[in-house]
Length: 502
Ligand code: UDP
Image (cartoon, helix red, strand yellow):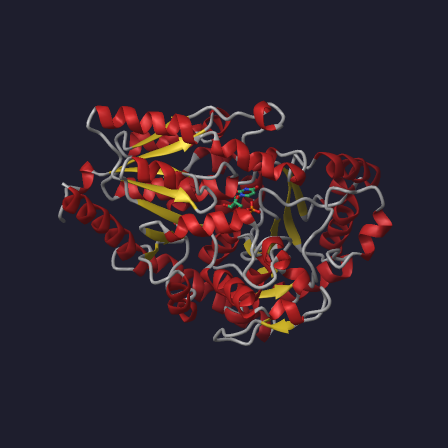
C-alpha cells in the first residue's frame, strides 16, 4: 500500500441520532480493525450513551478509536437542555432547530483540527454524514479529503432521483393515486403520500433548501461510502453511480456485522431480559420481533390496535416500545394496566420498554420474523439475520425500503399501511386517528403475522430466500467479499491521495 495504513487517521462526523451514530460507530470499528486510527465526533450525552462502546473498543483495537466530545448548544438553538440526540426531541417541529445546533459543532471542530495540524497530526480524511454539509468548510479550509457517508439504500436514492427529475409528480392529482416510478429496471408503484416529505414537496427539481445544501456538499466530496452491499441492490448500482455523477463509491455494508459477534458475546446482551425470555422459547423461528426504530411515534390508539393485533395473532412476540414517546405511551400504559394486558399475554408475549439489543434478538434462533418500520439500519439488521419481515413503513424513504423487501428481495409481507404518518404527535382524537391512511388495524396486523409465520409453501419459500440473503450478507463482509474488498479499496484510496499530497 502506498502509505502505511496504521499511519492513517480518519475523522468521522455523524449526525447526532441513533440511526446515524450506530452505523458510524460500527464503521469506526470496521476501519480501525483494518489499520487506521479513528476519531468520532460526539457530544457529551451521546458519548455517555456510547461509553460501553468506547471502553470495549479501546482495549480491543489498542486505543485505535477515540471520541472527540464537543459541546452541543441546545438552549441557544431553542432546544430543551440535554436534547443532544434526535430521539429526545419533544416535537418533530424542532428538527430545524436541531440541525441549526449541529452547525455549531463546526467551530470547535475547526479548532481541534487546527491544533492537530500544529502538532503535524492533521486527519488523513473526514467521513461526514450526508446531512452535515458544513463539514465541507473544514475540509476546504485545511485541505483534507472529505467523503460522505450514506446510511440509506441505493434503491431508494435512485427512486427518489427518478421521481424528481422526471417531474412525474406534476401529473399526480391525489396523494393516494399509485404511479410507476419512471426509468428504473423494475415495475415499482408508489403514491405521493408514501414519499419522503422533501420529495413530495418538490415540483420538478426544486427541492428544499436543506436538501439542496446536502446535495451540493455531496457533489464537492471526494467520494461516497454507503451502508449497503453490491449483491443486495446490484441492479441499481450503475444507476446510482450515474446519479452521483460517477463519483467514487464504496459499498461497505452491512456495517452492523461489526456489532453482531460483540453484542452476541457480550454480558449486557445475554443479561438482557429479552434474551433471557427468548432462551426459554425452545421452538426455533417461533417468535415475532416487533420494533420500530429510534424515532417512530405511535398514537395511543395505534398502540392499542397493535397490542390487540399481536395478541390475536396467537404467535409468540417481543414488542419494543420506546420509553420516550411520552404522551402516547402514558395513555397507552394506563390502558395496558386496565386491560391487564401483559399478564394476559405473558405466556406468549413480552412487552419490552426502552432500548432493545436488536441485533442479538434478531440473531436469536427463536426469532422467526421481524415486524419493522423499514428504517434502513433495521432493514439491514433483518437482512443480515436472515429473517423474513413484515413491513410497516412510517416516514422518510421507508416505503421504498418496503418495496425493496417485498417486491425485489421477496422476503417480506406488507402490513398494508398506505401513507406516511402525519401529525403523529396529535393524539387527542383517537377516532380521527383510526380513519387515517397511516392507521393499521388489528386485522391487518393479525393477517400479516399469519402470512409471515405461515408454514405452507409460500412462507417456507420466503424464509428460504431470507436465509439466502442473510448468508449472502455474511459472505460480503468476510475476507474476499465485496464489502470487505471495498473497505480495502477505500483505505488504499486515502493512502494514495496522501502520497500525492506529500
Ligand atoms: N435499535 C436498537 N434497539 C432498539 C431500537 C433500535 O438497537 O430498541 C437500533 C437498530 O438496530 C438500528 C437503529 O436502532 O441500528 C434504528 O435505525 P433505523 O434506520 O432502522 O431507524 P430510525 O431509528 O432511523 O427510524
